[in-house]
Image (tube, rainbow, N blue to C red; front, top):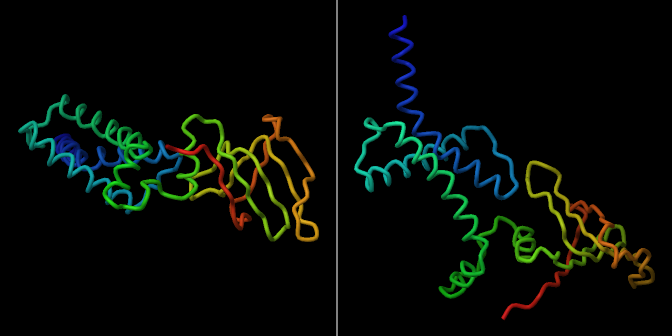
Length: 205
């Protein structure tokens, strides 16, 4: 019985290497983007694919087969699976990557959503100024974008600080509340209620 258990553990150890590096990469990547990670078949499948690519590259560069892995190899693979998504996160949100894409004629962004793009253009964390319109309620808010719930599994919302609140009357937006000089005042807005928005940020040379 002991030999059977030992054999099963050795088998799990051998195949676990085809899962954990990819899963760690996905976990770190989602954490960097403030998103949760689902534990499902899709995540498992992607983890296996990423892990297999890592192992192929590891074997190519270090000339070591999985069957010959020592604790040192497992640790190196773990470190690599953590560092790679961190480096990718830094590169994907750099102006350099954006300029390279524009240079080769790719008119797109590496961000997942337009809200990601808006928020992470604010490199100095001063808060990009937004005007968000809730046309169904005849309300408009103007303020600095300070926070955004980015996990698609949660209710999507943004927070504006130092905001002004306008109400539409006779076709014009009339200011009703003005906290423009008070950054301690925040307003939470459900993204589903936003029908359009205007963005104001520093011009880039």
